[in-house]
Amino acid sequence: MRQIVLLPGLACDAALWRDQIPALGAAGHRVVVADVATRHASLPEMARALLAEQPGELVLIGSSMGGMLALHAQHAAPARVAGMALLSTTAQADTPALIKLRSDAIVEFQQGRAELVLRANAMFAFHPDHAVNAARVDDYVGHVLRIGADQLIAQNRAVMARADMRPWLAGVSCPVLVACGDQDLLTPLALSREIAAAVPSARLQVVAQAGHLMTWEQPERVNALLLQWLAALPPG
Image 1 (cartoon, rainbow, N blue to C red):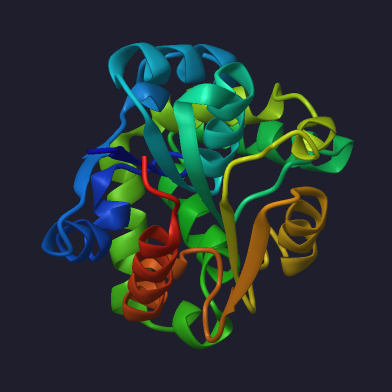
Image 2: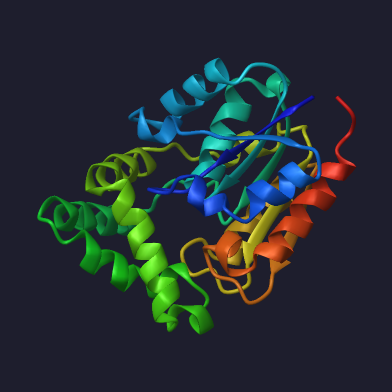
């Protein structure tokens, strides 16, 4: 049986997939959540560790930074990856403006102001209708604070240093699902459209009433998309 590997976003863990793990398991899929992002300093190093730790044929499902990690793993070992689902992600490198933004945030994290930064970031992480929900924002902030400032700093540095992955896309031959929230302000829909247009086997799905954290905002819709896509994968 193929191994499905869930790849969390920046400073996230298995809780990002709390609604997907039981749905995938109930459908008979074998699922693990990778934690390589917490143990390695760069996306290429994370990808090498992922491939070493997860044997056999893999289906990679990544959100945000997890999607970047999936692309790195597929690029490193295309024969090992039977499919990728890329949620809320981009193949582009960070722009100078984004690097400046992340660098400024790292200073705030180092000075103990992570919660303030995260609460300000919530308006971009969620669909506007969800960003005003205090309980939802508290859930998000608490999740990331549990991961900790050290991981926020290290993973932001890894993302800032990543390569432009767009030259890789035309060579991706495995099936690819690209999904994006219709109000994703952190990785806007245009970035998902770019991936879907460049990968020959990709299909794009837009998730309504969702921002960047679609796995939490629209879990049933995301589950349905993933299960439908997985069922259509060619047999291993």
